[in-house]
Length: 310
Image (cartoon, rainbow, N blue to C red; front, side):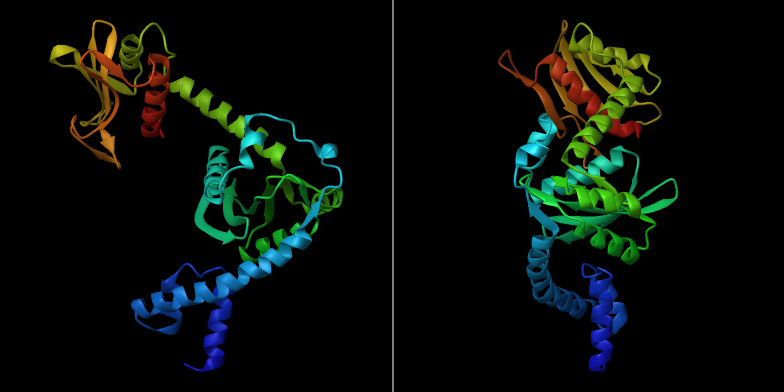
């Protein structure tokens, strides 16, 4: 293959953010997959490290240190206080979860960036580029971030973009974003969106599950009143909880009088397992109960069961 043709393919791969896919190189260069994987790794080592250096330089243009940080003091709550301390991986998981809970359809491809990542979401047939960035609260993001959002729209073929950041934006950035139709989510916006997502989840959960009442045993047995679940009693106070129409139990619990002495999740890695292979939430040893308190245990159980109703 000619040098110019190879460089053209390499340029396309880098510009279109396809570096994660060795299959792209395999197809474009017509080479074996193992050679494509080796080449992909070499490109990553060389170009990604160079891109990170470039991004570090770009960050200096993107951020502006606040002369007086008290002017944009964050409204403290459990989210604004903790988001800034997340690792890059935790931040990534949080933002993806947040968009999913807000009923955006998140595309699987994530494009890693220095101090953040890009991805694409859909909502009501609109395709949106999301730029998520993690910066210290002592800095503000300048209007230069809007050039990146405009480029992301073009590269990912989107009609609009959202910039999510763990800090604030300069006044110029806010003003220009309104004219360009770019949404800016600062740290307080993130906290508000998390609150909204949690309320939506809680409302949905309340629709499917009765509230905790009396004892854990009583509350679990009340799940049988819901059309989604069936509870079958076995010997020695053992109960199996099923999803209606499914032959494998989701949960097994045992009770002595009103006290739940054992509780086991029966689905692991999306596969049904025996009672002895399941994940134990509550157990008892020599009359000593091990596990969360009843109300907390019920909360964890309904969080576990909720995934099967989606």
